Image (cartoon, rainbow, N blue to C red):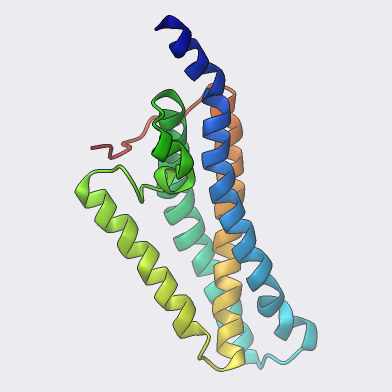
Length: 176
């Protein structure tokens, strides 16, 4: 049995890396899709003064609300802590779906599962709804989302580097 434990520890960093990389790839994919549309009215100079004020205002609001409060203070520490917890307590299915596990979409307390899934479904519905907005307003919202996601991505990368150096966040992971 000690051999199995040492094998598990040998794979530990790779399991955490897979969990975090999956989340990073989701954020990068969203940024790749949204950034050109968010920058379009700035490149083309099509924003009126009012729309430019909305653009900047919503961008700054999203940096704070989505980036700082949502990602940096809540989602990122929990995601990194859960990724490292999984790396020390792997099961085949949890490892296979490690990014979803890290995001608390699997193997969490009922309340956390509900909150995580409600956020996931709400974001998905918002993405669908925003597609039907006029281009100016869609760009304004996309710019805010790009700001929040960028903050979240850099926060996730920073927190992950710290964790791989031994400073894993000490947060409530909402494990069952």
